[in-house]
Image (tube, rainbow over all chains, first blue to last red):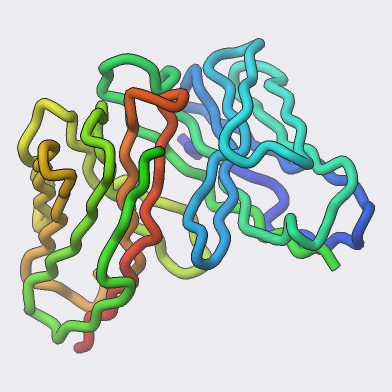
Length: 117
Length: 113
């Protein structure tokens, strides 16, 4: 099992450019998440998908869109990149949505390091 | 709003010494708490997950305790090794605010040979 994979590993964009970050998991998990990690801010949830066909906003959704393409794949799109979106982006998955008492763990991908000039 | 704090932000110990990492949270209404390890330039690796009904979890040299009423968790790493050098993050899953994980800022650990 590869676990959670993300592409690309690194990306440099100019302000106003668009791009899509890809994430896939092979653990048959129902729920998937996108976080960003910034120095001094910790990890913050951008969007999540409780199950195939559903997506919901997290703590910092502005400037991003997501697509749950199928059970395995969850993509994050920046329509018009801004320097404030320079960050490390992590995708994660868990067996099911973090709702209700459960023994869920979240598993993380290796991250995408994005720089917006 | 749930806030998670990890103090100190950085810690340096000689090899062989036990590590004690602290995590505090403001809202005790949680489902569980998860400890992660992050190596420089890498993703997060889950170390331990403690349910709100549990007091502690153990895995090898790692032991995590949870005191929900006081809003604290402690991660103990016995007989530290240079390979334990990393950043350790805790995250709580709350019952409110969409049940999302809220992360602390992490403690950066350096174990000196």
